[in-house]
Amino acid sequence: MKISIVDYGAGNLPSVERALRKLGAETQLATEASHIRSAKAIVFPGVGHFSAFVNGLRERNLVAPLRKAFDDGVPILGICLGLQAMFETSEEAPGEPGLGFLTGDVRALPANVKSPHIGWNQLREVSKGALLRGLPDDAFFYFAHSFAAPAETSPTVAACDHGMAFAAVVEQKNLLAVQFHPEKSGEAGAQVLSNFVEAVQ
Amino acid sequence: MTLARRIIPCLDVDAGRVVKGIEFEGLRDMGDPAELAARYNREGADELVFLDISATNEGRETFLETIRRVASQLNIPLTAGGGIRSMEQGRAVLRAGADKVTVNTAAIKRPDLISELAQQFGAQAVVLSIDVKRNGAGWEAYTRGGRDATGIDAEKWAREAVKRGAGEILLTSIDRDGTCTGFDCELTATISKAVSVPVIASGGASTFDDFYEVFDQGRADAALAASIFHQETRSIAALKGFLNERRIPVRLSK
Image (cartoon, rainbow over all chains, first blue to last red; front, side, top):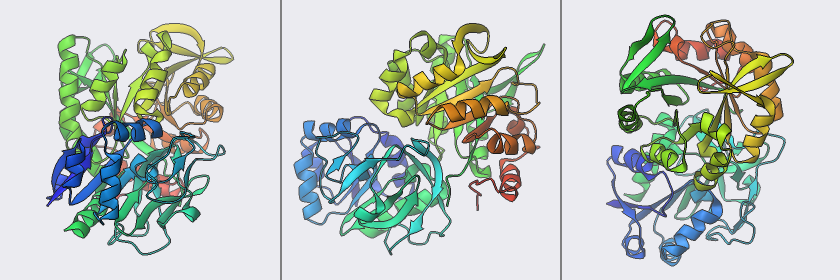
């Protein structure tokens, strides 16, 4: 089965694509609405600025088909900014609505810690989910972000602490997302992607 | 649960080969970039930095090819740079598979380069490299691989670069570089306290103790070194074990 990787014109897609293919998944880049409509599973990577991201989706008319895919129960995996864009708003772009698949807001990391939060950090599991199956509690994942969704207001499966407790893994029905970069997180990251691929098959 | 301090091997690349500058001797061939990168990946490197030191256009084209070849094998982050002067050159490096781009001389000449890169690719993709020499009571930024003095105060420059969107500072002590006398902890701590972004210390690493000191006293978020890792005498795994015993948080590979 093919996994559609949403291409909104700015992300570093080759590494996500390569990581999924290494796991034996078939992938295609989704650049227009029809690619989303035909998708059986969607991966939603993102780097850069929140408003560039959601505007890129709007310009390509991808928002409505993504909403429909979400409502129809198509498995969706958001990565980094892909996680943040699923919420209603972000402090990075006040007044710019996110996709709103999840209720809640994305906040800037507090000023008392180094930001961007760049590097390898560990997670605190708060409920059982699909993405972390088979991973040791002390596994490290690679993060690179300045904004995050507060853990307590999100459907958080695992939290991470950097100045505040934020959602590192969220899962709500068919919607799965990670704040870290699984494609850059060594063997632990590959296991997360493999769990997603397994869940959609 | 703490953010791990990072160990970052740096590879200087000339015409598709990893090289090392040797005094009176010029460049020595240290091996194939993809092979070295794969070894570092296995040994538990937290990310890699590739610097293009080739002087010719052909060399630059080969560098992009090297990035492509290396990136396709890695599942850790990759930073690349060396002579990047424009957003288009930055884009080419990122398109080739790097996750971050590092700029130095061109950013001092035209600070807008930092803003342009950050707006386009995000602060997390922009690493400002500063080469610093101690200058009386202060620290001075140098360009062109440490050859040209700029009269610019390194701390001030670091602050401005962060304001413009640099997401990390790669800080090299020219005084220590190649001396094997340890990182400049005073310089590293000064800059680390001055900016809100992570600081990568570089220049002078020789022993495991040097790394401990730059994390402990130097407040470094990451430490970068080249040649001590190229020769297989000191492995990254052994270094991380050493740091872990001394309560520096590191990512231990399984």
